[in-house]
Image 1 (tube, rainbow, N blue to C red):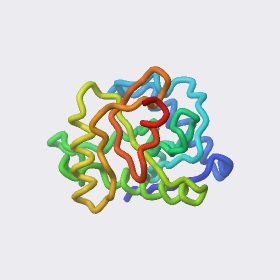
Image 2: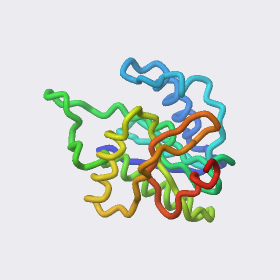
Image 3: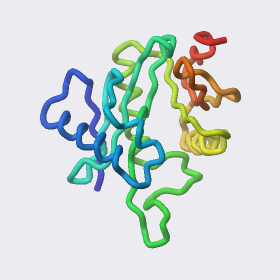
Length: 179
């Protein structure tokens, strides 16, 4: 049975730093990862990391804060989780209508809790797809699962040069960073 363990960046002990380095390397070389370059030589700062374990580390994401986020915390950054596949090629224990896989909901819950402890009130998740179909499906599933998030109908800047589709909790302060 898999589980998620989240830790603040300054708590990288008990092997977490090694596990995170291993997962970044794995993500950068994983054949099914369409964004491999996002994991190579990752130098961005982050607040916390979440690792999915199934006896060994198998997936991760980061909680980030950057000036361009205008006071928001970005959850599930650099999400990498090549979920176990069944013979039907569908993810085990997961239906698209669920929005996120169970382990990802655990990550999200832990990252929200950690961010709140640091004083964050506003959070977002983003994707860089051309159309909003995937993030809209994630949003619909989150709402069905009792999550109180909102879908931004227009893309927002999450870097100086990149607009992405955004789900947010609290206020969307990204809109104020680049009106």
